[in-house]
Image (cartoon, rainbow, N blue to C red; front, side, top):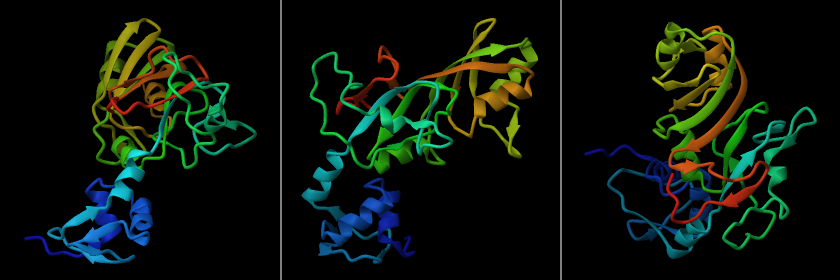
Amino acid sequence: MNTELVRLSKHMAQLNLCSRREADEYIEKGWVLVNGKPAVLGQKVCATDKIELLSKAQQNIHNKITVILHKPVGYVSSQPEKNYLSALSLITADNFYSPNNEPMPKLPIKGLAPAGRLDIDSTGLLLLTQNGVLAKKIIGEESLIKKEYLVRIQGKLDEQGLKLLNFGLSLDGKKLKPAIVTRQNEQQLKFILQEGKKRQIRRMCALVGVKVIGLKRVRIGKIKLADLPLGKWRVLKDNEQI
């Protein structure tokens, strides 16, 4: 039996109840019970303790919003830098996409953060979320979520290079996880990755002697970019699963 004591907020995050930050907020508001008693900030628990979220905490989690954005080239994923605009600046009423007349949430949507980077030179699907559990599921070290990219290249990629892109390359002194890389045509590849190191695809291609001249993310898990127009955004629906 595991009786090791850990901080309650960490344990709640490990159980995927909420993020650590959210856990501390809920504990402070009295929305968390440990073995039927109100939790306190800094409390430590063991694996056998019963953790309960009261209805107010559950409703708060349910109300968390996740936004799907078709990010253009020239926008950074998170904080603005070097005079470039943040992708968050595109979350406006004018850019809201609602082909089925879904209601737009009240703007601005506070607390949105990117669940995974998409560099300034790349376009495609970017998820911005208030949900810490969802973000961890996508970008956590143990994430199994696959991301799909269409990549235009310049240069000659031979079969050995294609084989190395699938498995055998290292970045930052660490061997990369196996990928699924296939040819779409002579100048376009499809990448499916389970990790997301900084500028990973561009660096992988450079290692096999080709240059990336266009990169578009089209899928994260089960969420597809589909027909979302460039620069537009919509809200992830309750029935959409990552």
